Amino acid sequence: MTKPGKPATQCRLCWDRGTLILTDPQHVEVVQELPGVVWDPRTSVHRAPGWRYYEIKAAIAEQALPVLDDVIPSRRQPTPTSAPTLRHYQAAAVAAWRAAEKRGIMVLPTGAGKTRTAAVCIATLGMRTLVLVPTRVLLEQWWHTLSKLGFAADDLGRYGDGVREERPITISTFASAKIHMAQLGCLFDLLIVDECHHFGSGFGDEALEMCSAPARLGLTATPPEEAARIESVGRLVGPVVCRSTIDDLSGVFLAPFDLVTLQLRLSPEERATYDEAMSTFRPVCRDFFSAAPQATWPQFVAAAMRNEVGQRALAAFRCSRKIVAFASPKRAVVRELLRRHQHQHVLVFTADNEAAYHVALELLVMPITCDIGRAERADALGRFAEGKLTTLVSARVLNEGLDVPSAEVAILVAGAHGSREYVQRVGRVLRPAEGKQAVIYELVIDNTHEMRELERGRRRLAAKEPATVPSRW
Image 1 (cartoon, rainbow, N blue to C red):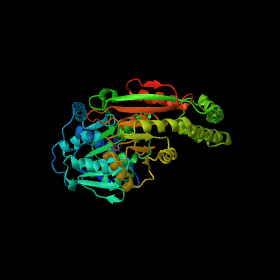
Image 2: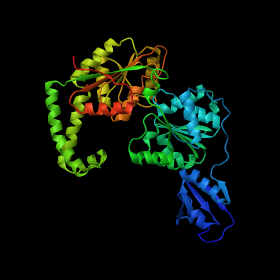
Image 3: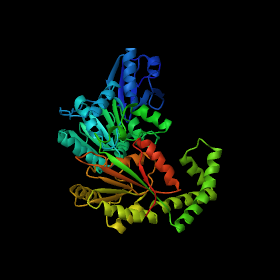
Image 4: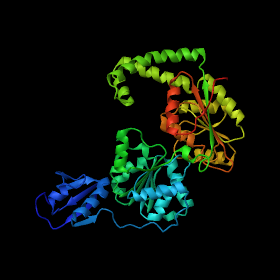
């Protein structure tokens, strides 16, 4: 290998375990100024992260630098496939993405057909494509959806759940991508990141950083709100190129819906326990954020864990959450709502698995949690679609991506973990169907943290004002 300053015959750009290397550069000064390129003294080469490939190629072309590009090897291309038809807002999203040089994020609400829209991008470009999804369930769902849309089975590969199939169109879980991207990262021209809001915090971002695919498409219903994460995801995937809300599409492309809030009161015993817990937590939290107003919740937790007072405050906070998660008035209301909607498809969302199992045991409904095996979960979802089961209860598993198009009623038993989860849960019942009128019930305990969380979720939903029903249970 040639060190900087020594004449060489040719510049070569190639792949090395998630990074790009430039060897034997003739124009050292130019190479050193390419985006992300640094000198690696261990191997005596100029090196850059894999995701910089798009920028480096553009800079090389602008500089008219002679280069031998060996990054993406020759591989079998996808079989040509007719693109599925799109609704006008989906077609507009594709057009906006292509106008942004095939790099960017589509923000479309749950049920608006993000997978179908992405399939059009795959079909029209005809590029080798890597699709990243957060869960094994979504991996299987993507595989089956692409199959139904006409993509050849021989073209569809999977990485995840013990399977390693690299094909022209490969679908991988985030976890598998993080492990195998050093080898997979240079094999694709288009990277699709489903639920891309998971990235941008630094945790797991290397899965995107180690991929050289120049074309990138992010899909989400709930993009990050924090400026740092928006910047990070934009750097690795691209900017937001289109945005539609539930309110934009409701009643035409999504099912119309009624949003009903039931404000409930804790029993005297529950209220006393809740207030005691919050009186322990609030002073510690208030003092910390008064001293550090720009701090984040994770920073508060880290600081609180360093001393006994902080640890007691966090324990009290967890206690307060547990009290309201499935308080006695919520139990009564859920029972009544399930009786009222016994002939409809109902999804019940809880704060955690413990509450989900309480609902399942008390009301004899099927739980869908991370503890349920894949075969049993698939069977339950199939019976729900067929009408053999009318109710499912879940804490997190049904939040993202999973198709339950027959669902008509959502009961939000506990406040979601952030406004993003709130929007995802509401979206579960908005997939359109002939004559469908969805109903979403929000169960909130008055004068608790749930009221604030509800307001944040509503603002992000950007939907109609809900009907608020005071406690009468």
